[in-house]
Image (cartoon, rainbow, N blue to C red; front, top):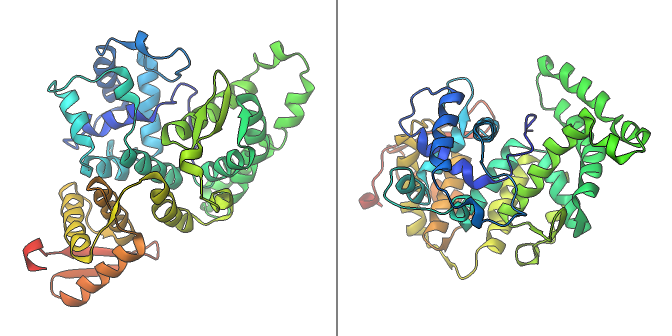
Length: 370
């Protein structure tokens, strides 16, 4: 669960620049990365063309610094090494990153709108990254907004901070080591009194001056805006939201996300959600899936991800297939990988991972061999 957010980090599109800035995978301080990010963005220059309702634009150096912090929270940057994290490396593997590289290197001009707008594959990528990093909080928020359909930002702030936030923290207790439980228990104790504290301040002007209101504002609005960028929500004017029916229609289980394990949530994202997000795709054949598994492995290995967790390899394969306008569900990709492992036991080596999953220790296989 992401425990540090800032109210100005609302536009996921900016995060795409950070892996491209760090592509040499050398350790970089957060201040250095944010200064580069700010220098790139401030020179775009057409910010006045963006709707006044658009929030989260980088207009000051501190905004860029907060986006770098968010990139670390969703593991695009590894905090310990100050190098690329898992999701930073995965973004560089996507063909979508070529556009951002061209922009950074001066071969292409992008407007501010283009800089903050995600394509469909990037929307799915960021949904996965957020589900992975902000579990179980983001799922609880999605379940609530689907149930409400229309709501104001103030309604969302009150429910999410006073119901979903403490409930999500309680779930964290069972999955975090003993060393972190004390701080989580203290936060739960505070969160359980949020409603009481808010209701004790009857004057709205006084309420918005409090540090507690600032906490509400830093935690909730960015997450609502992330869901706008991904396509789950639509903005209906200042402080008003509704479901984007184009994406949600037919996703009958989406309101149950908050009750699913992380594994089931990720499975749902790549099975049901991706089918709703993309239209006009043809189903990938086994040969194409085999080739894309090899492509995904080679790209992951190039960026230093070895051994590679099999479930990561499968999801990256699914993303690369979508970039080719084809669809392969995770079950099919898993089955094709197993077939390759049986056919080429001397080329593909797997081993158990500490997490209980499976690692692909080595895949010495070329497309021509299959």
